[in-house]
View (cartoon, rainbow over the protein chains, first blue to last red):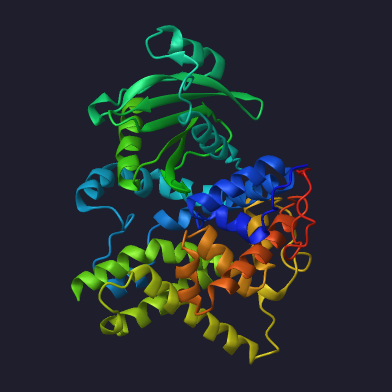
Length: 258
Length: 176
């Protein structure tokens, strides 16, 4: 169709893996627009990477076997990358969730990961990626419109809340309704003073057991997701794991109070 | 030395994630990590200042993994689960997408699997991956393309596994 040079398969992989210079990227972008096959490869590889991160995410936050802890002396039990302050902050929630009833639930959940449909996490990440870059229509209904939460609650079929994150520097922009495997899901979007955006995705979930927070990363953004029946949640943003975790904590704490 | 130990400890979650995906079982993966940590702690002083702890630890893990495979292959009577195809291993009763992914990964060659996981799961750059595995960057790239192509086929993405730039790339249709 076009006289453009066809890009090689290696270049397509390098494109997904962030190994290209801006000029090379532009070339691939053009090729992708012209070739559905190339676009499919890029899409599949991205999906594959996300599937890998999801599949093995539990290894990142599981407790260490005693022999490893012993070997290292004082190894933190929970996400080792956390700074002490956040770790202390996180500890309350994580221990409450993990050591208590959730120890068993988590185990059971991991064992039964087969059917559990974690598609909502994919959907949440997909919706995040799609809408955070919207300049003119980032949300469907703005936060100022008071029917926002009522409308989403009605459509999602369970009480939906838009937590206030202003104390952490995040202002609610609004929300939108999204399809999720034949169900309705809600996405709230927040923005901070520097223009960074954060989304909180939720949908009804009655089939899966409750989980502790799980972290996944995709490219340069990350997401924490958890299930707290009757809802499943995912919070995503281009933030560090620690920042996202404190936001997830804040969201969780507010939802608990409702 | 204490800060070096902390730096090693901080990498454990990622090492465990990688090892789990690499060897396909939690217990086997943790054995590998345990060996990696013991080796790393024994030669903390060989870790050059400024060198990324992640890269250093992944290299140690890789070497131990390869040694382990070599030892296994010298004992032919033992048939590892890894070498069984999907039909022969546990019956596919779970229909799990996660387990499908486990199985598909285990059907790659070990070399392809390492590259697919270091780049795709752990987010290492091609250069870092090449250093960890002690192979040229070009080899990283070709193993990556082959491994991912094969995974696309195994995971029912249409049209993978063309094994190179043959021009016959993915068809549009996606079977699910």
